[in-house]
Image 1 (tube, rainbow, N blue to C red):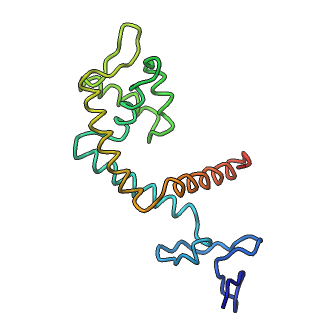
Image 2 (tube, helix red, strand yellow; image 1 turned 90 degrees about the vertical axis):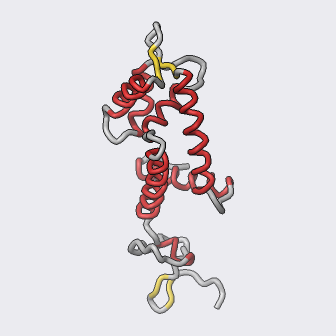
Image 3 (cartoon, rainbow, N blue to C red; image 1 turned 45 degrees about the horizontal axis):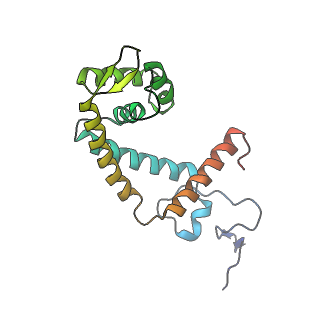
Length: 175
């Protein structure tokens, strides 16, 4: 039968002939030869939901939220400790709502994982650093589960494709 492209008897093969590939309805059971016709929004959305759910469930078991982990990592390291405003500005695009990161900083201050120094910079306490290291170890283990069977090269290629698609949609070109 070979590697024909296009359509046969009016049925799309899912292989591009150089022209636009038809968009099929989202199908969780799509075979590999039909993946080119699948909507990226569906599959990227499913990946986001599954990975986020796995991470947030694992973090909840140790009484940490994903935004708390973001803040701990944001404050850790770097040439200079960030101000509260810098942490909020850096992480606000990731948050579910605009005031979430500011609240998380307050939670971590109350928990004793962060402190504000005399220069109004946000710093990890020893307890906060220990928590950050513990959470990082957990997240690294979860990452190995998510990335199972996916080489670094495949992962990089997938992210490059997604980045190009985002740029295409946002009108920035994509190359």
